[in-house]
Amino acid sequence: MNHLISYSKRGPYDEIATPPEAVDLVVPYLHELDAPDHTWPILWESAPPRRGNSKSKLARRLREHGFVTLVEQSPRWDFFKWQTGGYDVQVTNPPYSLKYKWIERTMELGKPAALLLPITVIGAKAAHSFVTQCRVILLPHRIDFVGKRRPWFSVCWMLWRFPGRPGLELGY
Image 1 (spheres, helix red, strand yellow):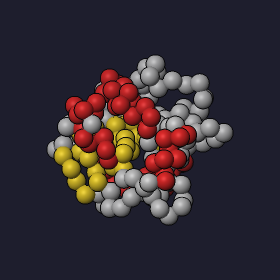
Image 2 (tube, rainbow, N blue to C red):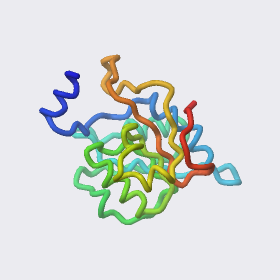
Image 3 (cartoon, helix red, strand yellow):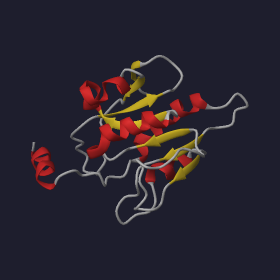
């Protein structure tokens, strides 16, 4: 409860990097998009760089798995105005204060996407059309984003325009 009180006092806390463990859980699903010749898709980490850090931990972990990743490095870069190109799949942990706007823009872009989102998005009216088209990957446990060993909310990977039927799945 103290976390929720703290959150409401400070406002959105969008500056949290994605732990490697969360990235590792989506990798098998990303391989479902491999080309018939076994080439891997080009991934785009679309979230803005974290304050004071121009490196994306999510993109770095994807590269450790062998993927080619594109990352926008400029803090002035705007996801909502950018025009598509150069990538096959968006893979990101968007700023949660912008999650519904992010989902809407993702759908406008029209390319496959894997978004790490709070599980509460499943029941949100603002995300209904997106969620009903997604494979929602429920993670086997909560992800510890800040390293305090007490994660206080659950997240899931929402796979949009991926192979397979939309619906809930228990992740690897």
